[in-house]
Structures are given as structure tokens and as C-alpha cells.
Image 1 (cartoon, rainbow, N blue to C red):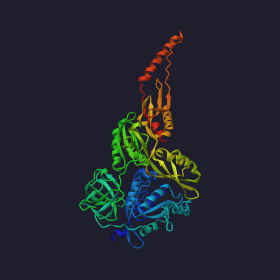
Image 2: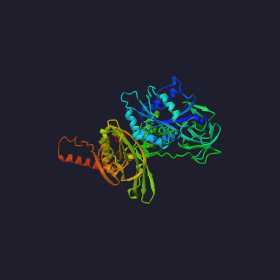
Image 3: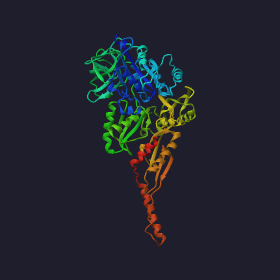
Image 4: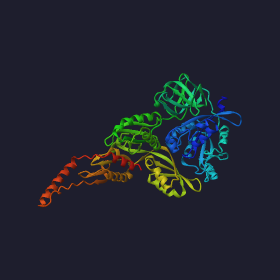
Length: 600
């Protein structure tokens, strides 16, 4: 118990680009956790994508030793969490492994959408929140205004806050003393071993590496453990801490954060939020908060070169080893050939997977129109989940369709509020609350269909607000809507790659847009090609690609007009026959151009 009294488990929560990773760097530097020669910016961000975009994608725990002013040495366990809404569940599990959080707010920009969302998550778990105002070295920093925003919007008292510059290191030492003084030590319950899995990693040589926080008991090498969600038992091969590199230790005790390696070969066997206990004298109740992660956004990935199909499958398998929330299955499209239907947690997750496939595995891909999971209520009282337009039942069998709804928080400047409200209304959103943050900015809380913010909503939001708006959202359930399947037909045949589920009021506009785009990219044939957009059997938009005209009368340099007429009639008959039996093959470039164009 005495050992646990000197442990402090905490995390850093912030909006993107408010200095979370930079502050983590300074804390590592002050506690001498990393040798001076090994220091670099964004030390805890391993991926190139994380370093380029300035975002955290994977949680990175690190253990530090800090000699406080009271003469005691404390063990600091920092869990660097992702900040994006797509990884909300991982964030809640990481927060559940802590007793406190540093709330970092940019002193020049103030409270943003993700600041609000992550603070609510921390408050729901009763964490001690320490406010930190960062970037005080900037000329535009306004401490008084930001302090008032935190008090008014987040309801956090600002009697004691910390003004720092994470870049220069000014003001970092007092934060470490505040962690010792204000964040409570872990409460270590008596009883059997219980450890929370807040993340995991796949090592090709040693299997699954589980990141754990112990709430009671101990875990040591050679012990038999059991996963409470599956009931599977394993033998522990190694336990250790991140210093920040993995360092084996004899055992992990209650209150500590570290890793354990057992003989778990399949990453799918262990899930974030699961509870690990002793195999013989185990706990009967798991730690609260565990739930299965389900993908929210689905899209088809097809290789541009058909010869890359096997390579794509092998690449997806490797990516899934370190990301169990990503799912995929093989599918076959008449238009695009063989590919995979992939499920993602959200748009950023989808973007990251696609970018990693391009960079790390050198794959050129076609991505189909992304969609969400719909709940389809059938006339026979069954409920079917549909993520692919091809699997939507016939209209006569459908009683109603429900779409996922999100609660979106948008923070924007006062002068942009009119355009932002118009954008929300265009996307079938309803504003529930308007809150003034300061004299310059407001926060709009609105309910919106998730499929309306999939494609270009964030880009449009940034455009109408001149780059100053921020967005965060959370899923709040399903609601019935008038949704239909829009099919695009080329010469009477449905092209499955362009099918999508869309609201009836927007089907005609999207159908016209797709037909016009296809008209520009499909090469003309010797016969007319109709391009049609249809809902069920009703055609709602049409474009026609005119036939190529071969001049069959060119060889007639004179003589009777009946000779020319005979040649033209023969050509007309041939075109009629060709139109009946002719097939239109759409070139691959057409798919790439139209699908990219339709996604913004």
C-alpha cells in the first residue's frame, strides 16, 4: 500500500494541435526519463502519419520517476491518449486507467470542440482535472478570456491553473508538483487480481503485447491468467513497464501501469476494455465499461491493378494485427472486380488505413462511396443491419429504415454563424442549443444524420468559417428517415460501384451529378449510350452519350441520291442491332475519376 501511495496515473487531454504531445515531451525531459541524446519532437508518436499530421493515433504509456520537493520519489504513469472522436472508446478506456488528467488548452485559440468532448469523458469518470493554458509565449495569447471560457463552458473552477509554454519548457515544473499534490494515488482494492486492458500491440515474434493497468492483486512472469470476456487462459511470459522503451520487471503490482506478454497469438482474442484476472483464484466481476467495438463507416477497397488483389489481402491482414477495430471481408463487384469491403470506426480511421496501405504497402486503390450501418425494419417484423447498398432488401419488404444520428458540437466565429446554420440545415441537421463562448465565438449543438457528414462536411465547414470552425461529434442512436437506394445504370445495366443509400430528397440531385460526371469520362461508342439514375424502377435523372458518326457516304462523289440513302439506311439498321446487343465497358480511369470527384 505504501508503494501505491507514491504512484500517480494521469493522462493529457486536448484538442488537436493544442500542444499535448509537446507537453508530454517536456515532462519526459524534466523527469529525465529519456537521455538528452534521444530526445526528439513528438517522442511518443511512432508513426510517420502521427508526426506529419500532429495527431495521436495509438495510446502510448510511459513510466517516469520524479523527485518531488517533499523529498519523495514518485512513479508517474502517463498515458498519451488519441484525441479524435473516431477513437472515443479507446480514450474512455485509457481515462479509466487514470486518476487524473491534464486539460491542455491553447491560450491563443481557447476552448475547441474536442476539448469539450474529452473533458466530458474525463468528468464522467470522476477524474481530477488540472487546467493547463499552453502557448503563453504567443503574442495572441489571451489568458483571461480563455480562463473565463473554461469556467463557463466546461464548469471547471480556475482558482488554480497553470500557464506554460510546452515549446520552451516555461512553467512545466509546477505542473509536476500539482500532479503529486492534486491527483490522488490509486485506490488498491483487496481481492483477486484484476487488470484493465486499455490497448494492445502485435509483435510478430512474441505475439500480442497487452497494455494493462492493475486495480488489485499482482501479475508476475509464469502466472496463469484468464481473459474475462472469452474465458481463455494463458501463461504470462513477460511483464514490464515502458521507460519509454519496454523494460521487463519481476512483477506488476496494484496501481501500476505496464505491459504483459502471454502466449496470445491472435490479436482478435484480446479486446480493449477487457479484464485480466488470475486463472485459478480469479475475480467473478469484470471491471466496468467493457463493450464490443463495432465499425461505423463501410467502404469498398479495390486495387487499380487486378494483379494486386492478393497483395491487398495480405496488407489488410497485417494492418488488422495492430488494429482489431478494423474489419474486412472479400467482395466481388461486377464493375471493379475483386476487392474487400472494409469497416472503420470513422472517417479519420478510414483515411489513416487508406494512407497506410498506399505508403507502407505501395498499393494504388479505388475507394467506393463510403456508407454507414442502417437498421432496416422489414414487414415481417425482422430487423436487418445493412452496410452495403447491394444488400438492401426490395422496397416492398421494407417497413422503415433507421439511420445513425450524431450529436455534433461546432465552435465557430460569430460572423460565420449564418453560413454554418445554413450548412447544418442543408445536411438535414437540427440545432438544439446555441451557447456564446466569448465575444468572438459561439458553440452550436445539433443533431445530424451521420451519413450527411461523411464526405465533405468538414471541408465545407472549414470553408464557410474561413478555417476557424472546429467539429466534434458522438453517436446518440438511430432515427427513422425516408431513405432509398440510388442506382446508376449505364446502357440499362446497374453499375454496383456507384450505388448508394441516400435520403429521397437528395437522390435526384446526386443522380444528376453522377450522370453528368460519367458522361464526361465514358468514351462514346458507335451507338447512343443512356446514363440513368434510378430509385427502384423509377428513373429520376438521365444523360445521353451521343453516338460516334462514321461518314459512310464519303466514297460517293456523285451520282443518284438513292445510293447515299441506301448506305445511310444500312448504317441505321446496323446501329439499331448494335444498340440491342452492344455492351459498354467502363474504363478503370472513369471509376477513379468519378469516385474521387463524388467524394469531394
